[in-house]
Length: 249
Image (tube, rainbow, N blue to C red):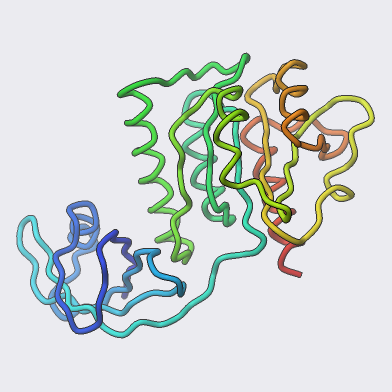
């Protein structure tokens, strides 16, 4: 039995490290013992991959491991897909982060919009961001990804359109907006397979007409998934699935 464990530490073959508290607790819950093997990943460096590791000792609050060989293992999909999501209410955002990570999202931007039920600022926003980061880590450990998607701090849609889009704008980037407006082209017609994709979707009830207009003014092309209206947590995952599959043909 082995387990995949994420750590944000630098990993060097032949060196011993102490696992961070959450990872150590995970190993203890699995009832591992000294001599058992682990797979470690940290998402760092220019080459994607993971390390073998052997448990050296286990204390009440500490797990020491010896880092073994590095294996270059590519599991990220192309093109990179960035999700900008009007946050759904209750635990649906947790579920969305988990599944988006499994499906390969490169980053997730939680957004507050006119129709958003969930409003986050200050310390509460920081706690939610850390919580979602933990969900993404657990999903990566389970699904085999070696890079944890970036979970951005919650932001207002208008502020994000003005400032946060700049780092991911490029000649090869595509920006798509899920919309029910008349004449919107199907996702299958709009999406290509070159460069990164930023996909914007609204919360329950969707984006307002003014918000859609602002997004389109920022370069987002409206697209539709067809005749059915999907829930706010389902629609971005459907788009992500399509974009990931067609991008890796």
